[in-house]
Length: 223
Image (cartoon, rainbow, N blue to C red; front, side):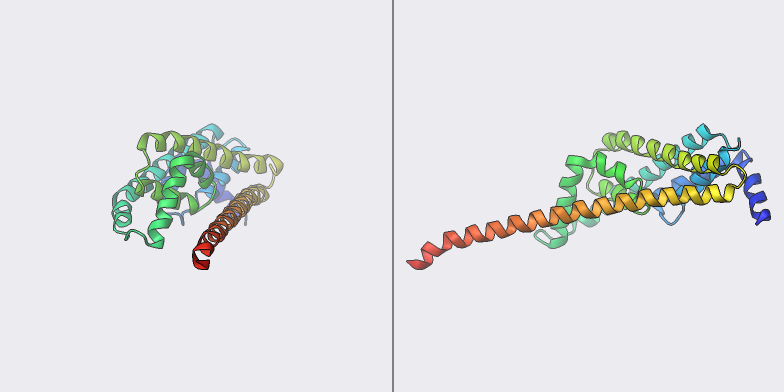
């Protein structure tokens, strides 16, 4: 265990750590198995003891996330757009895509910002925004906000854990990861509840339409 901590100390005190954080955040933007949150939180934990420098961690993490999201957006805008255009009109998948397009058009900034805190979800959203040709300038503006807030949040979560356990960085790291996991779970629960409410509202609306259609057809049947 001490060997692992010594290795982490050496890694986090190296100037190359900033390049590593940037590269990991870029990859996580379009290859979501790369644990960028863990890297940034770990850096934040050790930043509490002086190295690495916390503002630099925030900056490179946000810049990497911004670049990675744009790579994902570009991939979606290329191959994804062509795939969506081939969906047959009137199909369920085409209808789902149309709903996604309308949702992104009306509240794309909010969707993008929230998705940045959901590992894996961010890639799906950025790919979809590219595929439906969400305006690139608006994507850049909202993604800058999302990436910046995510970099600050991830680094500060680790930093708080490092401050709480200055003599035991491993516990600080576990605390930081636990806080990040809690936030992710809360976001997912809120999204699930909102989705369930929207589905219930659509079901009620469909039921009301069916009742009205039946009421209109009954007089004709009676004749």
